[in-house]
View 1 (cartoon, rainbow, N blue to C red):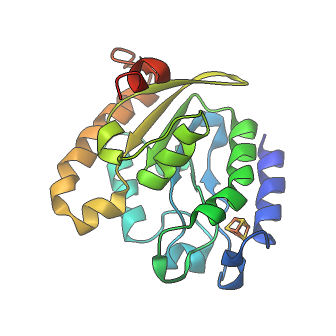
View 2 (cartoon, helix red, strand yellow):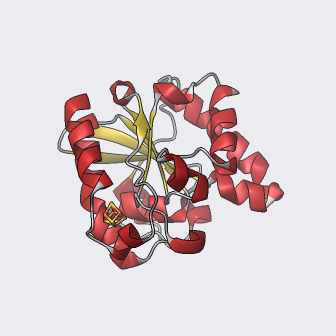
Length: 207
Ligand code: SF4
């Protein structure tokens, strides 16, 4: 697994599949312990991540690390990556064609890790991951804080969407929602929460 992830990371570091490679300092493949079976997926690298080549090391990353540690999870014990592996200029949102070009890397990372839990951080990540299972997500607020069971080639797994930590930095009112979600995330990771799980079909049938 680790060998395959390093092979994917090497390909990402020299990738020219989309124009985001033109302005990057470093691509950011992801890091952490893939053996945990827990993957956090954000949107795209920011300035600090571009400089260091590591995910979630700026102010949003510090909040992520704090939210994890305050719930008894070290960031080194989970795998952290983004949908798009190179920084969009000026930290703009990634474009659809950039997400599409980069998606095969995320797919291959997930196929290598075979996670039992995926936490999607923010709208782009949630749309992309649930979209991989054929479902459209219009609003992160409509799905955050819910568990979705999805089927993959390696078995069933939980997808749990929450807000991107950067959203709580820009809008302190979202901080308590994020803190509540991370308490749930901790219980899900530790296998303490299974009630309230919804299948994708039963949830989306209502919308
Ligand atoms: S964002 Fe993804 S597809 Fe685009 S150049 Fe970087 S690694 Fe390649």
